[in-house]
Amino acid sequence: MIYGNVRNNGCITSLPENCAAEVPCLVDASGIQPTFIGDLPPQLTALIRTNINVQELTVQALMTENREHIYHAAMMDPHTSAELDLDQIWSLVDDLLATHGDWLPEWARTSKKVQAA
View 1 (tube, rainbow, N blue to C red):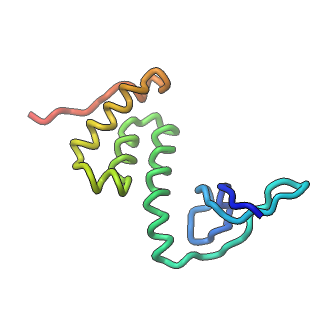
View 2 (view 1 turned 45 degrees about the vertical axis):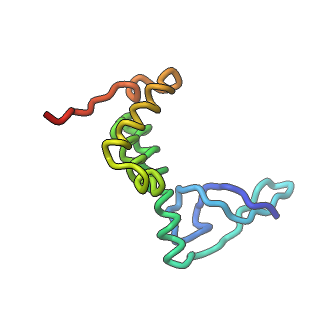
């Protein structure tokens, strides 16, 4: 038995099917077999959802080629939003995208933020 990060696929019924879930897994000649967990207590589901929300927005950014969702994901991150205000988060994401721009698709490199007058 190991703990593995797998596609949820109903292992944890209180989380979305397509999210990643770390669950006990049996490993045998057939491969990795995730273990069914069922529902988590509501307080744990709520805590985990704060991370899933960030992951979903990041995937949305990639699927729709919408750069704003990268900012939205950073704004929804519990630690980031506890430390920085929205303008600081926007600047942080701009800096990260600029620094890693060579590794990113063109749509993610071009800022479209409208500056306040």
